[in-house]
Length: 84
Image (spheres, rainbow, N blue to C red):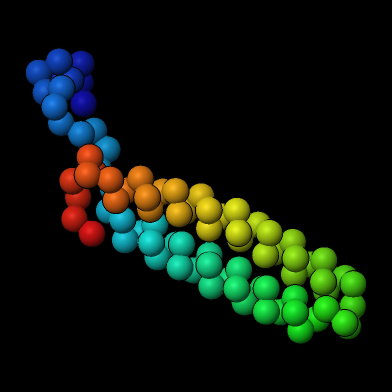
């Protein structure tokens, strides 16, 4: 948008994103997190290296899932007029 358009149309939303992309990303991140958590439970008694590796993967995918959840929540606000 140019400065002239902003001055003439202050009521329009500048950013409109569909919620489906963040919902799909959240689903994938949550699935990897759950799979890693189940793998940690299976590896618990075998090796400490496997435990730390899978815990690290689960930790980062949990953070990624939280970020995607916030994005999804923001995209579902009424100010975002794009349909799902």
